[in-house]
Length: 84
Image (cartoon, rainbow, N blue to C red; front, side, top):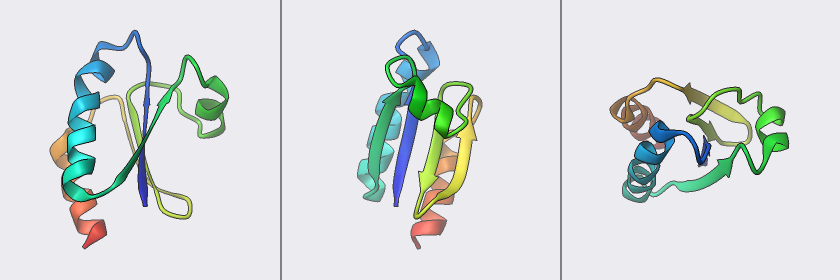
C-alpha cells in the first residue's frame, strides 16, 4: 500500500501540506510517492488529477482519493482503519 501526493511547486497549500504528509506516512509506516504535476503532467493525466494537492491511496489500484480541501486528520483516520 502506498500514498501518492500530487503537488505543484507554485501551490502554497502543497508546500504547507507536504511535510505533514511525509510525517504522517512515517508514523503510519506507509510508502510515500511525490509527483510534481508540472514536471510529470502525463502521470497526473493518467490518474485524472486535475487539481493540487491530491492524495491517492493505492493498493493494487486506487483505494481512496482526497483532493484540494481535506484534513490530514481525516486522512489519518482512514489510513489507520485500512491498515488495521
